[in-house]
Length: 329
Image (tube, rainbow, N blue to C red; front, side):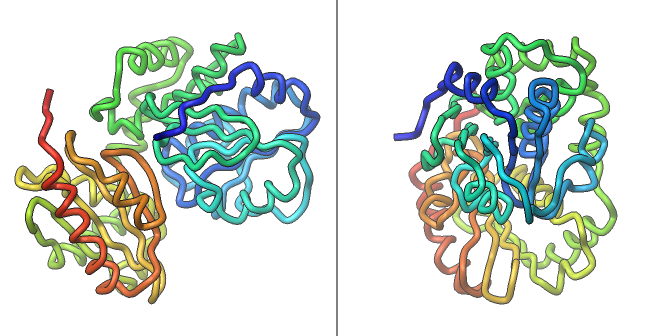
């Protein structure tokens, strides 16, 4: 049973009482990770004199257009906080080194998330798996707290919603999601800019990786897969769009119900990026392999060689196809 607990009042009281706040998000950050973190940060700098925000490795270049993106730290080596807010991370390990440091140097932890696979870490839960993005959870929180939003808050929050829903195309988009997006746009958030910078752009180096990975593409029992080896990615910096862009493209294949990209992270470690069509659940496979996510978008990092990991994961995905049923309603 997934965690579904939004302690709005307790979370707001913790913010109001804190003299120092740290915000962290998950490693290999996507648009929702950075969008929700900056949506929190850009509001909280109005409420608290000492606010820091961090993610391992810093902000991906394609998200640097967001207001105050340059304030996000890539490492934490000093500091202590009354309150830490973890956003868009289903478990503690996903927050990386900045999360580990933050937990060791913070008095109270708020777990803000929207993943059904959230493990329930932290002291205060703001977890709603029924919404499409962590940014939407932040939006709900600020509305519950009766905080006045402005463009600096709205732009990153709309970015989180747009990217995690692939432009409002995933099955978890509801009327409330569209209403939130409409209000954020009315506050000055630019849907045109966000779409252009996130969904409709990629550097050639990413396309070059895809070109190298193409010969590895296979379709087997409704599962389409591709491999990205260490050699394939030796000249790429934008690893986030390298993996997620390819797996999203593969999911569009008519005969494929589930798509997966196996990316060598180290010689003995492989990252899984999984997507599925509506009616097919990849989250349980991710959970089995030590990861997490949504029914239609999940991931994990698995120890082992590329061949060993493929041998473990592919049968699980084939089973997930057999247990699912295409739903295009």
